[in-house]
Amino acid sequence: MKDTYKTITKASPEVLFKDRNSKFFSYAFPVKTEEEANIHLEELKTKHHKARHWCYAWQFGKSEGDFQYRANDDGEPSNSAGMPIYGQIQSFEVTNILIVVVRYFGGVKLGVGGLINAYKTAAQMALEEANIVKRTIDELFEISFDYPEMNIVMRLIKENNLNIIEQKLELDCKIYISVRKKDAEAIFEKFDSTYKVEIKRLED
View 1 (cartoon, one colour):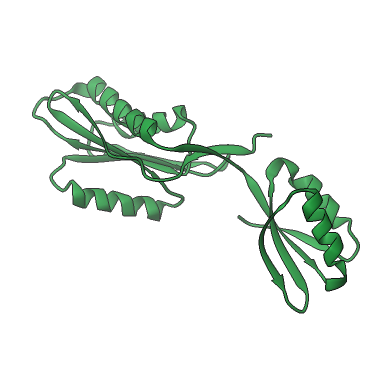
View 2: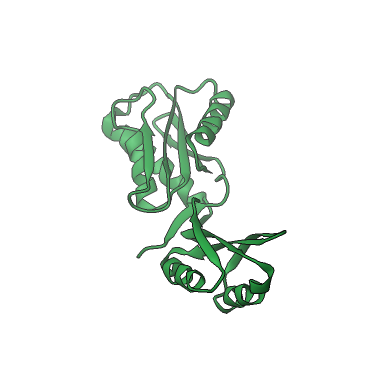
């Protein structure tokens, strides 16, 4: 079971690719929602208000079957901009990412082949400048118990080197943990079979 994915930690520096007087400024941003992607797009449209095209692709999700993506040619010939950008997202195997390529037309038409190459190259350059990291896909659990069970719960957490996200120790106790996906079933069983301890999965 694959339980890792690659993403970027921060926006990449601006990169410039030129072809026959056309300028292609490229950017990569870490994003998790379409709303976040749209904010970056609007900021770039303000910054590059004299540009001709703001083409982009994004992908969200952490694993196959979970991915959502969009590719936008923004007025360029069909599939000459958005899909070449998205192709680089696939090639670098990154997700939760937005890549935008802003084009200033230089007066010379590049043709569909030239455009595909320019947008692909600009997206590739942005990704090469980005800080790509590998992350684990984790599942979240809520563990509920009373104070007498505190020692056994904490021992299980320590023995299995589990990551505590939050603790609510009030009249009763709740501890929230994240578990790497490949270990999740085994960890669930350990707590589920512990007397007077309840565990349930939470949505990420």
